[in-house]
Length: 381
Image 1: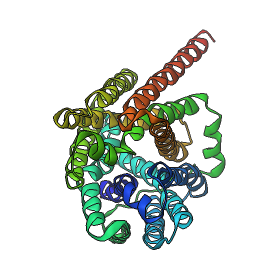
Image 2 (image 1 turned 90 degrees about the horizontal axis):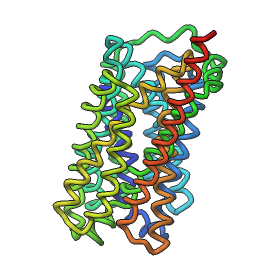
Image 3 (image 1 turned 90 degrees about the vertical axis):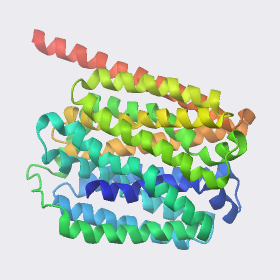
């Protein structure tokens, strides 16, 4: 059920990317400028996740999850009726506010329901809802958007949010709130350098995924030669890779967290580079997009890393992880758009993504180096 809520929220995040040409046309802006709708959503996540995590630190988990879904419904209802560029930007911002807190709290709830050595797999199952959005949700939203326009797609998502609220009310167990949690204890976690370095790894290192995904529809139709009707099928292939990455990645992380994170980021460097090399080949593009999707394993991996370094700030850290991934959304979409606008072509987004993945490896390497020094100092003391 937690994954189902993630399915609707994830569909909303990624569907706007597949609907980007229609959004641009309806609001009379260019596609790179329409990338601002993606950025606005990401900023909503970045602001909403820590703010909600701090203010609702002592809320019962089930009530908080339902409230977050209600905010999702408001954001997507407003998106469906937005009448110009500015109002759609505002609506997309509101739609992003519950995103990070939802996934963060849902992962914490899932982790409470399993043994300690299965936390990453539990987080992977929750995040599989986000991955499944690309197999089921985004193709469905894209299809609805082609038939009824992007307003119909956003209205469908608002209706899905209402359905999820009803199902959560009946089927999500009441998980006791953390009595020691408070805004003060959550804010105290911000003093931990490892928390910030892990967030920096997510913010930069995962931007490559969004650099490619933000402009995937025009790349597939203008460069690879797919028709607009075939785009949902291609997105489903990417989504299957994301599901595989979540499940296999969670299993790997539960066995060796730090090596798994390094290997996943190296994987992303390689296959994001391959995207730029194979965009003119339909078969090559399908294979590479599946493998790029597998790199989504980085999400549950860094989620568990944050749980380990956050101390008492579990809710804030879990939510900030998704703020970080949506900073990567904004960074990837912006840099990818700049590359395209600079005349480097649609396929150049893969090179941008590979460069961001390399920077992520550097940040995580610094994190591990500092952690090793701190451990050595503590041992000598």
